[in-house]
Amino acid sequence: MGNRATIVFDEYKPDKNQTALYLHWNGGRDSVEGFLKATRILMDTRGQDEAYARARLVQVIGTYMVGNLSFGLSERAFDPGDNGIYVVDSKTLTIKDRRVGYDYDEQQEYDLNEFTNEVIKLINAVYIAANEGVSYPEALLPTAEEYDAQQAENNS
Image (cartoon, rainbow, N blue to C red; front, side):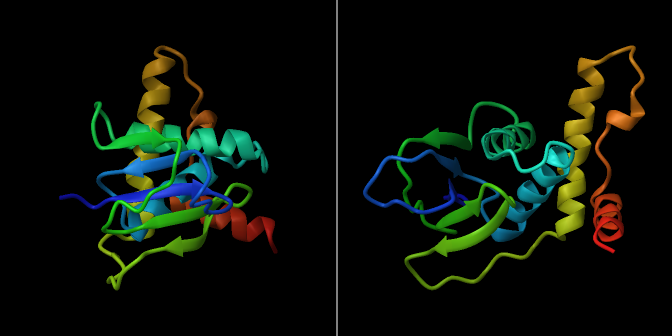
């Protein structure tokens, strides 16, 4: 029992090896979109570096899912049940396709910005702990709302 999902990048290759992220918990669309948004915020100044974006998504999820359970990497994508397979665009860090082999109700228990802010708070706490005694408030990630405002300003 869980709230499982698998995440693959760019395209689903059912008969080929490809890196897949397995989530035992937080596999609903609301959580996955929150992880993706937190990663977009983290990657904002890096640009569309696909290799780093994929790695940082792993980091973001791992920061949220502390310990040694409930999250893993696989060399083959599989449908674990519950939420199926998400296909994520490496450039935009958005969901571009979904593979679910059954009828399901889309999970929307978490508000996107609230969940994203929970993840951002953990990432900022890790940064602060790693840089103890050093004050770089500009290096801390903005909230989801601050990021949205910056994006809107950049696009106007």
